[in-house]
Structure formats: C-alpha cells, structure tokens
Length: 223
Image (cartoon, rainbow, N blue to C red; front, side, top):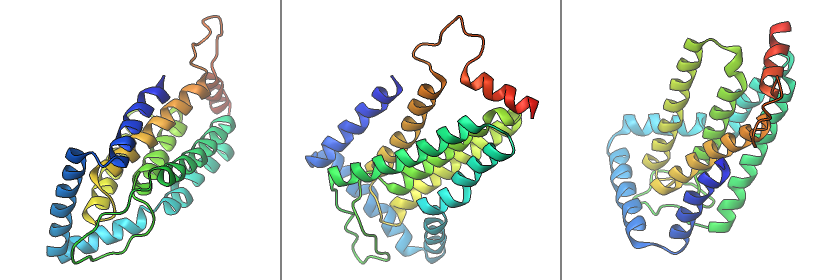
C-alpha cells in the first residue's frame, strides 16, 4: 500500500517531465531562474550553498551517518535484524534512484551565467533522494532506543536537513523543483514501504504476541 501510494505520484511526475508537460516545465524553469539569480547575487549565500552541497552528498551521508548508525544498532543495541533491514533499504533506494534517472533522462537546468557545474541526469535529485532515505532509515532504526524528546528532536533536525538539501539543489542550479519533490517522495516512500514489509504488516497476525519490532525491543532491553 505504501509503495503504491508513493509510486503513483512519482510515476505521474516522471511522465510529465518525460513528455515536457508545459505548466510543470514552466514552473520548474521560473523557480530555477529566480533561485539561481539570488545565489549569483549573494556571494555569502553562494558559499553556504556550495558547502552544503558538499556535506550533503549521498556518499557522505551514507559514510558518516547511514552505515555508522547501522553498525551502532548492530554492535551496541543488538538490533541486528533492524540493522540488516536498514542497510538493504539504503542500498535498494540508491539503486532505484539511479535506474529512475536513466529511465527519465532529464537534462540538468540550463543556467545563464552558470556558477557551478553538475553532471548526470536531473530527475530525481540524487541528493534529495538519498538524504531522505538516510534520515528516514536512521529515524526508524533508532526510534526505540530513544526517548520521546530525543525522537522529536531528531525528527525535527532530520526534516530540516532534508528541506535545506532540497532548497540547496535548486539554489545551486543542480535540479528543478520537481526533481527534489520526486526525490523526497521516493526516499521517504521507499523507507515506509520497506519498514512496513519488515514488520510484516500485511496484515499483522492478531494471535502473535510479538512482532519483529517487539522482538528487537526485547533484545535491546535484555542487552
């Protein structure tokens, strides 16, 4: 169900992009021009946006946050099945994003007087997709090892991080608005569908006393 709900809007966006649907293309272009004009006119903002582009690269997010969180969950919290789920979900999400780029083959925004160079296809945004995947996976992976306040703080930080990353891609002229929108939908939706499958919600068996999630919680409490 989660996969279907997310796949439909992504498929529609991909189709509209692929067929050059006028209103969407015009909106994307207007937003891109306004954003890149602002960046070009403000050196300090350009420096910040460029720095954010570097720290939010997919490989950085996986190396600094995603994989270490899985190792921590495996070694210290003894949530081994969760850790394996997290690794599999991140790898699958990265692959799907790459395949979708090759399928749609959208060119990057053409920026007048460009201030940065970006290669590869544009739809969906790899930064937006993979940052959304890593943030969502880490939230789901560690949610039962944290208190309510810590969960809320981590959720707020994660949402802010993803939104800033999406804005950064537009202001840097690397992606269109529809690219980052599709990236977030893909990243969050994939993780939700994967997590639902991991917990076995299709549907739950009312006679079972413990789901996988409860078993992991028990293991953590024993540890």
